Amino acid sequence: MIMKRKTTFKKLRLFTFLILLTPLAALAQSTPNLYVCGTGQATFNPSFGAYTPVNGDQIIWTIDGTAQNAISYDGSNAGLQTSATLTTGTHRYTVKVIPADANLCPGEASDEIVLEKLPDPAIALSTPKTDFCTELASQAVITAAPNSITLPAGVTFTYAWTATLGATPVADITTIATQAGDKLTLKDGLAVGDYVFTATATYSTGGVPIVPAASCTAAANQNIKIAPKPGKATITIVP
Image 1 (cartoon, one colour):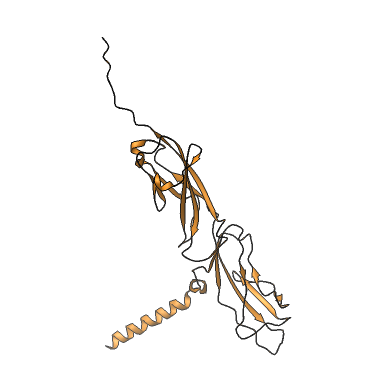
Image 2 (image 1 turned 90 degrees about the horizontal axis):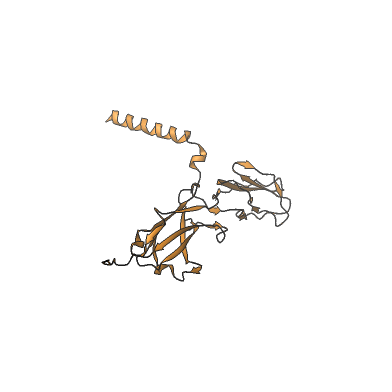
């Protein structure tokens, strides 16, 4: 029994030691509070609990572990607007206040706001071939996928499809094709002609806000030719 207790105690000491060795960054928040795309910018407005900043207080923002130049508070300038040229990846922000009154205690830094800058959206469409008989059109499966970009964990693309036949838009694409996730499968019996299918991708972030949401899209086209089925053969007897 004594040996078992000693072994358990040693395991607990080892676990505690490993926790102490873990970098603080590894214990930091990993799920983003916000996604940014393109040149989108977010604005962060701080508050400091029961303390209300007064003119002359120092507002200090820290970005990715680096303290920024102190802002001398003037009644309205405590906030921060993120850069329009952030690099792709994770960025972390905290803020604190140092009162101008030396008799007051400096404020504690906020919890991190985690911002993830998304790669510029880009997609490509593919299909095994581009020419199909009208009665075998369901063999045409168009697949959409990110093109030369890696999406962060938890982020996917949602695809919306449109089509034209010749120069005429197809009013309701569900009459000629069925969508399932990133794939569009044509239906048998399509009208003969040259189709252009367009997929428009938007980021899906699991409910986490994205800035700007409306313009953060990418599109790609795929040409498909639907040919008629040859008619029933006839034989002509030549005397």
